[in-house]
Image (cartoon, rainbow, N blue to C red; front, top):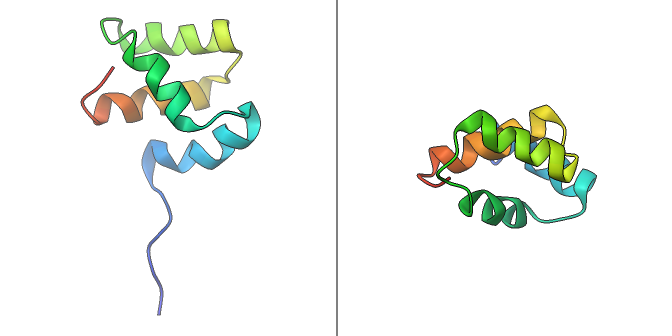
Length: 71
């Protein structure tokens, strides 16, 4: 018997994001909520330049938030 508890898509990056940057994903999503008027790549660039998040992780956070109807 197998259960499909493994996250897919952008959320699959969340454990690594939390481990690498030491903050919960909710912290990063809240930051993105404050800049929801900006384009996807502008948000990615912000996370990279201001918080030193790698491109893949930043892109995953923005993509996830946009898919949820935010940012």
